[in-house]
Length: 349
Image (cartoon, rainbow, N blue to C red; front, side):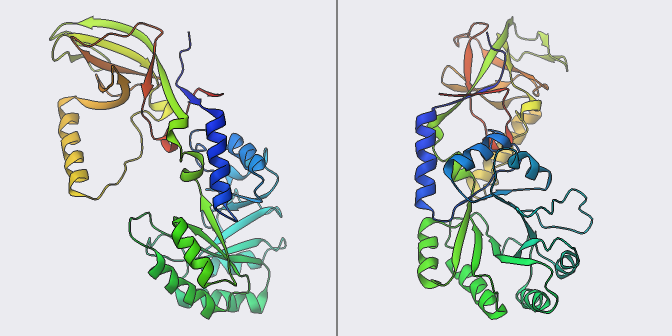
């Protein structure tokens, strides 16, 4: 009997999907960061090698070594370099992201001649140069050198509207800056938008950075399962759990594998902005106050409620009377956000 939170992958279907995404996106730069989208960074490095791509993007400097153990190509670090960064790697296969003039000046003073991507600020207002600063950055490079320019980067917001108007404005700034490297590293552009930009800016090379759509784009190829570790009948008013809560009615307490150490109960919010999304969050807040929060565990075709907040490696669920009670050792489905969840075991067929 397994006691783990396990990710099951239909290997043939998953690999076919990844090849389709790669082939549909010339110059693709797979993104591997954090927990490796649930698969682990080392495995994504292996997959990048298998996909035969030349560049892999990571979020932070500590992740460079973890992907480089299984991937021999170029590694692009998405978090901007700062002078106080003690974990930076200046090997020739690493590209640094820079979004401030003082940082570019500091990197230009190093002996390694680092490879650098200049990030242009977008409507996200996250990192990057303004239009004027981008011109000054290119002028600084022309005067002092010291780094190898690999192009410019746009990190665009995830939205339902078109990015073309914004990217047109950003590209005007790139052209006006006299950027010598005709390469644009982009995130969150649709296939249609990429095709349009490649047509309009034929002298530039667009490198789409893609994570979720590549690794998680075919959700039917992925299935997460947990193990029922224990089952306890309870009557209304009986006490259970760390916090000595009382059962609201008769049913069963189920102890299942998976807890906060895996990311269960800690999933990143979806950030929906619609009225329906906001109403759902308000409703969930009320449920939380009453001790009834929907869990990601699915039993009998329904997502069941946490009996109390999840523990480190296991969770307690409340199953109302009348529902089929799974046996100890039985596996149940778990609906998780892969970017927030880690697994004890990954089984790829």
